[in-house]
Structures are given as structure tokens and as C-alpha cells.
Length: 431
Ligand code: SDX
Image 1 (cartoon, protein in one colour):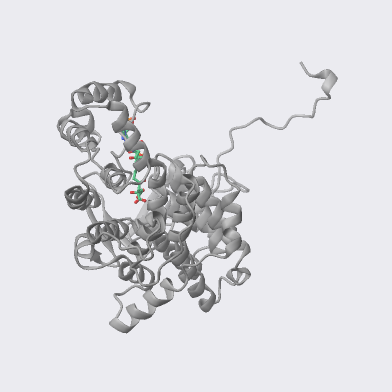
Image 2 (cartoon, helix red, strand yellow):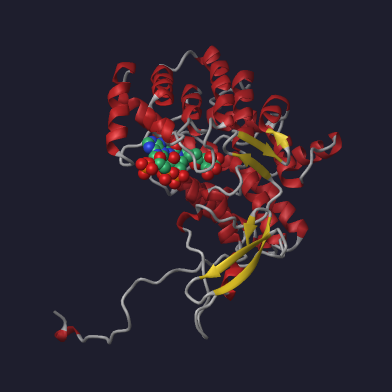
């Protein structure tokens, strides 16, 4: 008997099956041969929320959740955060290797020269209420880009995919800045091609009447490091949405809109906003023990936002780096007074049995909001700032899915628990 197999004895029939094990997994379709009678559909695996199901093979991001390791294309996140910049990291994620100097120049040039939006985009951003959530506006606006680029439908044309990649990575900061300026009633500020990716974003967010905006270098660098940390994270909820929607062969703008919509939720990318609201609600350091008590008694109803992760059962390596970035920003902008509450929450949580037993540690969203707030951004912009860098990860995962011969339209099975067949009851006979 081959050693890399799993032997299953079906006690319902007494039959024995040998199922191959590859890469530490069995293929769920191999279970289908296990039947109890003729016409039986075959055995399925039941896995709500994909707790133990690999939906793809991927070469992009590696996470070891127990050890707290994160690598893009094999490169440790700590090295990339220290030595790379966001556009280089985006290239790495999308192309599989670090660029040469000319490759990086060409890549950066192309992204920089796709930052301008069609003027009509402004018209529909204008249509949103002044208090519309920026993430709702971003989701709609990026989906609407689908209507501007009919060529995006040619998803199996590598040249078309390349072009949409430039457009999406180039235009996301512009969309983000425009929705922000709309919220604040400020005139839209156009991209400045002389600036770096994050320098230009700061320009479009904060430019006032000056002729040339000069980004604060520490903030520009801090934002760039945050963008590297957020660029990809294997099969998270929004990436799963990107792959799932993309699997029906929608164009990438619609798929990115779906991914951004998934990111919006407070259990995912919306957590950075929720953390700030939680810190403000706690109000002061001395109220932290009381809040922790509420979380423990709430048993899932009151959450310590920015804590816990499906994969990390150790400190999220990104949170460690973000803490250092926060120090550099606070040196320039002054210490965020909410930091003391966050540090106290972390200190108490890491010593508390409830959190230790469940392996709950700070995740990427715990400290990032404090940095964005110190930069002068309102809380509801935080998920938008997550979506910008995640776009490169989404596109990369989408392309990998499209080119993977094993992938098809994503279509899970279900276990039906509803009513058995019954006949339609006319209105006058209903009780
Ligand atoms: C991101 O997946 C990714 O990679 C995502 C991300 C990325 O880069 O794409 O890393 C970005 O989304 C970070 C996560 C941001 N979300 C939050 O900070 C929200 C708070 N966190 C939780 O909702 C939760 O930890 C999740 C959603 C992140 C993970 O949920 P799981 O894996 O389904 O775990 P679970 O909810 O089943 O929790 C297990 C236990 C439960 O207790 P018991 O029922 O066993 O008693 O831990 C408890 C939970 O109640 N728990 C928490 C908690 N998180 C989990 N209790 C209090 N506070 C928390 N934050």
C-alpha cells in the first residue's frame, strides 16, 4: 500500500477506499466514490467558513500562523518592509520575482501614468451624500470603472490584463483621495506624477492652495511601509471574493469591487476603523480592565477589535512592524493619546487566560488606525487605506486563479435542510 494515501473504511457499507494524500491534503472530489447505494451522490466534506479547506494552490504568499511568519514570494515581510517600497513589492507579488532596475522603472512609470480618472468619474462621486461612507463610495466607484474600459473583458489576453493592472493600481489612490475630498467638501486634487506612490496619495488627500505639494518624508515612508504590509495575505475573505467573482470571468474592476466590499466588513479590513471606535469608547487607560471583563463575559458578542486571526495563532508579524512605524509617525505628529489605551489593552490581553487559551494576539488592524488618525485621516477612511495596497494582491491572486488549469467557476455544494416537497397553497386556504 502506498504510504502517501489515506485508507477509509465506510462503516455504513464495510467498503474500504484508498485516497491519495498530496501536499498534506486529500482531494475532496476523491470522496465522491464513497457511496452507500446506486444513485447516491457520494460523500462530501462539510466545511462552513472554509475552516479546513484549501481552495487553491498558490505561489504568492506564505504564512505560518503558529510561528508568526509571513513571506511574499518567499521574501520575509520584515526584509521587504525595511528594504523595499510598495511599488517594488507589488511588482514582486504580481510577477513572482524582484524587478531589475529597468523593470522597476518601467513598472513605476506605467503605474504613475495611469493615475488620472476619466472626468465623468467625478460626476458620480459628486452624486453621493456628503456623509456617505468612503468605503461604500470606493466600492461603487471602482466597480463603475468597468464601464469605462470595455477592453477589460478580455481577461485571457495578457496585454489587456497588464493594462487593467496598471489602471487599477494607478487609479485606486486617486479614487480613494477623491472620495475623501468629496466627504470633506474639498475640490478634487489631481495626481502629481513627480511624486512617489504614497507621496502622490498624500498630495491628493491633503493639497490645499499651494502650487506644489511637498509630502512630509516620514509620513510618506510610513504609509509606504504600511502599504507593503497590507499588499497580500493569501486566501483572506476579500481575496476569496476576488477569486470567487473572477471565476465567473467577470472583468477585474467588478471583481475588485466585490473584494473591496468584502474588505469593508468590521471582521476584516473594517476592523481598523472599529478599533479606533472601540478605543474612543473605552476612553481612558483605567477603563481597560472593565472593557476586557465585558469582552470575556460577552463571549463573542463584545469583541476586542484588532485581535485574533483565522491563521495566526501567534503575534501577527505585521503588527510588530506597524508598532515601529507608529513610533516614527508619533515623533513627527505627536503621540496619539489613544496609544496608551491600546498598549494597556494589549498588555492585559496578552496576560489573560481567555486570550491566551484562544491564542488571540494583535493583528494588522490593531495599530494601523492610530497611525492613520495621527496623519489626520478620519476613521471611515481607514478601510479605504487598506484597499489601496491590497489591490496588487487581489489582482495577482485573480490572475493566478485564471491561469490555473485546475480552477473553474467557484460553486460550493450545500447540505439541504429545508422543507420536503409540498404543494402550493392558494391564498384563501392558508392559515
Ligand atoms: C484581517 O484572513 C486574513 O488574512 C485577514 C487579514 C488580511 O490581511 O487580509 O489579516 C486582515 O481581516 C484581520 C482581522 C481583523 N478583524 C478583527 O480584528 C475583528 C476581531 N477579530 C475576530 O472577529 C476574529 O478573531 C477573526 C474574524 C479575525 C477570526 O475569526 P475566526 O477564525 O472565525 O475565530 P472565531 O471567531 O471562531 O474565534 C475563536 C474564539 C471564539 O471564542 P469561543 O467561541 O471559542 O469561546 O476566539 C474568540 C471567539 O469568540 N475571539 C475573540 C476575538 N476573536 C476571536 N474574542 C474576543 N475578541 C476577539 N477579537
